[in-house]
Image 1 (cartoon, rainbow, N blue to C red):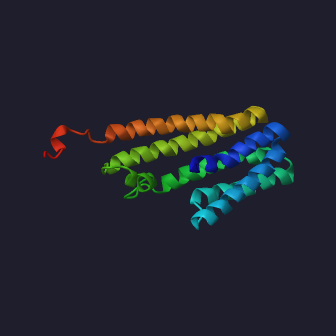
Image 2: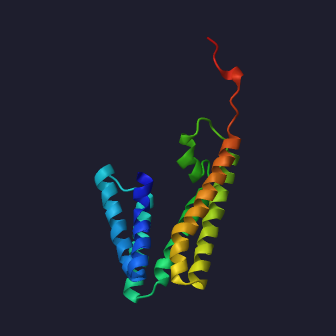
Image 3: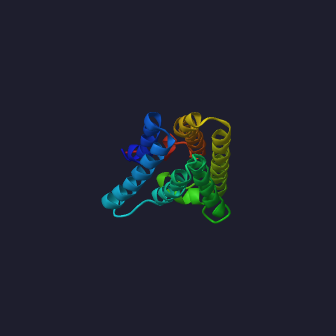
Length: 185
């Protein structure tokens, strides 16, 4: 349910674009992003960092799109967001615990080596940088209609495939369960 709620502004943007074009869709995205932020605050008593950053970028770049009547600003938003993610991961890359380790380690049943976490962290940095560049390539070389489809479906599919790749790496790094570790009655 949470994933659907988090994706709701993008889904509404896509639907609004198909019906009324980029400027109406941008207004819908701004409104939906602000409503998502308010909903999180009311429901959880706080707003997630990701929601704050994304909403701020939507307000800035969406506002510029509407004010200057140029769709290029809203097209920059995913690349800026991905670049910020890459920068945050890079900032912590050589620290004792990279950001990715702090975010994910508690979800795993065992402790994995620091070198493994740094490698995963680096993969995510590269993924976000590649996504930022790919978004700009599509934004500047293809029609807006193609970019809107790419933003929703292309980036989502690439992200899902990358997460599956990461899950496979993590599962391979986890120690195999053996019968000898079980306690006998």
